[in-house]
Length: 521
Image 1 (cartoon, rainbow, N blue to C red):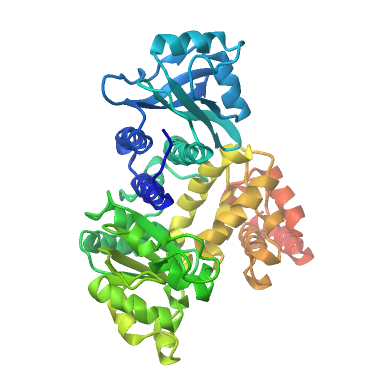
Image 2: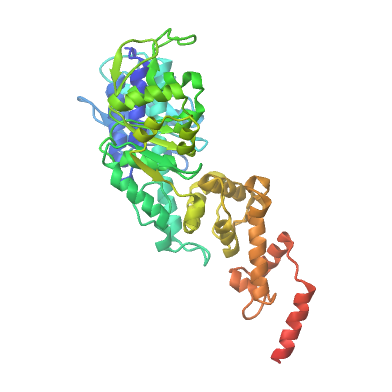
């Protein structure tokens, strides 16, 4: 048996899985993975699908999830499979494809031969999955009633499904590690348990400031409707995360969530990308392609950077928004799609309308419910939580263990204007983590021109803050009321920081300090 279904059917299948796993709460993960395996079985026409992981030292093959149909039973989850040949293939990243079992197995695979006979396998494919640079899991599917050949395209498709499952599980476990990290207090500079937990249940959205809560309240109000939403805000503010939240809280959450970046598509291809095309519709159109509207049918379509759409495409988009009807390029057949639209832009659409670059009627159709996403400058209170959340998420991959951030460094991070918003903050933090070998994060070495204009650089802010505190403490680093205590630093750390930042005690300061001590006597 070979797969004769068109690529479009698999695209729709993968989009459904992607939508299902996007922003999925932890308590729904097991059910979602089981459903994904059941749909994979139906798509392939097999009888069992299993997701395994390598656990322990030395590593062993352990069944994490398994689904089966008919008289075939799933593997017990948590079962250890004594399959050394299979383990080695997974660790090496080599797919194992067998059309006739046990005949296709190599002589050295003794345990696998015995296992396949005992289980009754006729054919099987096992595809290793790469996560964080390691092949530590795999997805398998097999038949028990008849032999079958496996095509290269099927192996690729199975890998894509496995990658989606493995990625979702990895994110779930990272979030669990994050919660554990944030509930610990590494020192006075870190978040307390209460501060570490945002007072909302929006998955993946970090923060608890008033501007953010106001936006989340708006999302909660409109999510359950089919109204078009226009997300307005600077680049890097998290508009895509809010679009995910709108979809996840809607009645369409089990249907596809399709995203298209209008700024990343050449103007000549935008219409084809949105509405699809027939084979031969233009030079290079060698096959029929389903557009994003068809893929999103029944679900949600995010039009990111909608202000970059060409005027001609804007007119056709308006028609679809009005009656849900469109034609593929090269076709006269009218199609219909039931799609909820979320648009996002960092441009001023009002200015674009005045300049004749954006249709006024389209603007009012898209902005039924506009939401203005605050910049990081407007939610500085969220920066400590954002910093620790990012550290927790990235330090396993970077091989770092950051447990301390000084008050001076955190104050500097909160004082900077962040023209690139959360995206820029994450970029600066990642570079700082790479350059910080010890447990305390330092940012001064990474704050060159890329961090912004000279008068906005964090190093300048940190230098000014430390100098101000030193002046308040009359340049005392030890003793009662010293600057090190005020900054939350060890005196030796403060001396080192002063040396790095070029902060020197002025002569007048020494003289004033001596005079002050003389008067106190």
